[in-house]
Length: 192
Image (cartoon, rainbow, N blue to C red; front, side, top):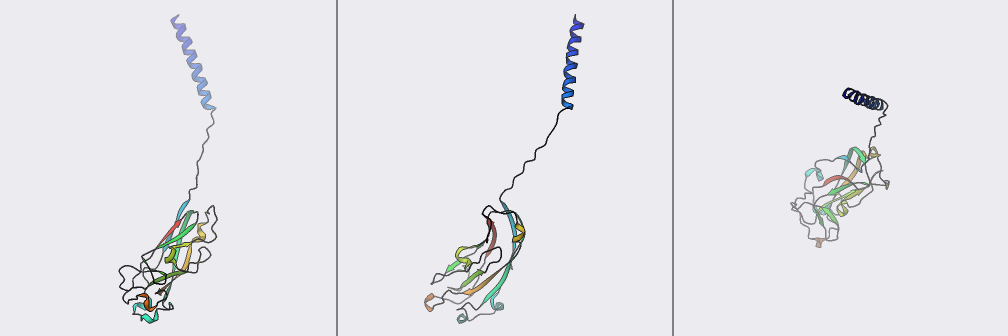
């Protein structure tokens, strides 16, 4: 009887194992890949390290009104990639406000009073014009799709800016003081 019981158990075990084996041989596997696009990305920005007005030679203060001294330069955007909402360039630095309300870039170490750099851009196909960047610190994107875009290559290239030596309206009551003007400006690529 014991042998018959062992044979029955063995027969049941073999039957179960063979059906499990045949089930494993008939299974179909599938792979699922998860993908997501996140808003974000970057562009590399390069600018000249230093710009000197009048080739570094002194400038007479009566030559500043009318913003006759200026420097044109390009900021270059390269290796733009990602998926952006609205790209923009943040421009930061220490500013002063002249007596007539003009905001100008000027470092606190400057020995001048009332003088600064008025930074402007006429814009291009990708960025809007800005006639006084110190006033709002942003160069915004032009005609960017509301829901964003992954066409970042179109941002690659130069954007021309001009820095004018300025004292606003340059009135005699403006408390102007001659000396050495220093203005440090930082450009940062952002999106929102």
